[in-house]
Image (cartoon, rainbow, N blue to C red):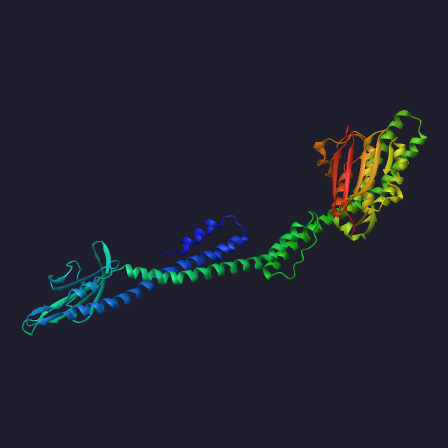
Length: 479
């Protein structure tokens, strides 16, 4: 077994992490070191188990070696071998764990045994009476050998005897694996439990980041209010402060532009109204056809400019800061539709348009939403104004109100030429017009969309058969 170097683990982590989420990256950075430590612990455990198994086997081999040595008895200058068949059967009793023995007289004179056991490697003269333990191979099988040098004979003819007992390493390896299994399995369970605890800790630690993400995702594109995460960790508060500084800078820039538009519109309203009045007076006093034609063009330009200024003011009121500054209240869409429709009837009659309200009368239940009454009125007026401007003479314009689930719906439908389906999304952008006819400026539907979004609603367009257009505003009902 081999451990993984630190540089290799770093490359492996980079390869595995890739573009995954922060949860997975943190989990990998915490789990991979645990796996490396687990492998290192298994390696160390196996070696420790093998060492202790060797000690146990060496002890048994030494005992057997001494017992065998006692059966070889010196007599004068010779040896008397008292090794009965029963003792040999005991030594060779286990067929799964072969035991080899040999008695020899160095350097290589065989006396008793298998003739196959390798002698110990000596760095000097053998130490009599001290055991030697070493590994060897016999018949391509790894073995563990215990050797014992003994002296016999008198002082004049002193000789050395080597007694060896060897056993296969199967028992040792089995014991080492058993110790390894008994150690690694609980350790694996602990690592698995630790991984689960780490995963739960990562989820809990990154929960404030998820809450911050939810705060950002749930916002409208033009909501520049600062983020409120006072209870978050210090690192996340630092990020929130940086985002809030950025939002504040963007808010200031947008507010400056909006103030400029609002101030310019207010400043232009009075001179445009005067210009419109003066052209009307001049048209009533002149009799020159050429001059009258020029005055009519001036008057049309003044009317268009006055309408543009009025739309710019409405758009400024529909922006977030202006909307939030106004008081919200409960608004009955049905009652609002009655009032606004009645106000626009004279203009519709002047344009030869049949303007009506699809209403069930006093028996119909109210459709109440929570919002800004002036802004909702402004949105409905823009829809009716657009319908009257572009539907054309002899057309019908119908205002409808009803409930649709948890929404209150305002609808203005006309039987005019309508808007091509491929322009239904584009006409909600500022200064985008679906036709060059009429005196519009391309801000009416943009104002309606901005007001609707301020109230967490939706505005949609739909074509009518055989021709015509439906514009529908859906606002959440008040609780």
